[in-house]
Image (cartoon, rainbow, N blue to C red; front, top):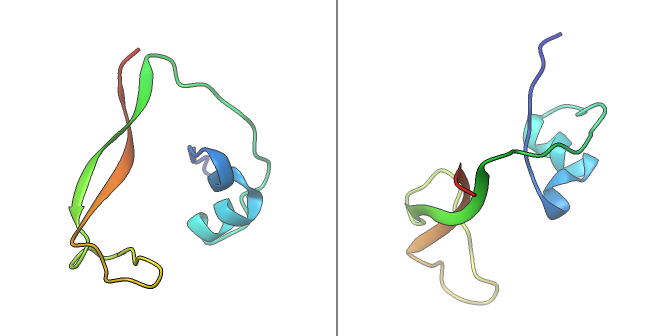
Length: 74
């Protein structure tokens, strides 16, 4: 079986959420630390044409979206 690393935080590391992301049971989950990396909201996308868009509850869909990224850093 091949090994796959899925990095997440908060509710994204719940087994149910990992299963939805992977499309299968994630098996054993364990914490890891990425050294010399940082999280930053540095991804920008067109929210109207992207394959996975985001809606605002009770309002219009925003034209632009921001995403959390892992970058080299402290």
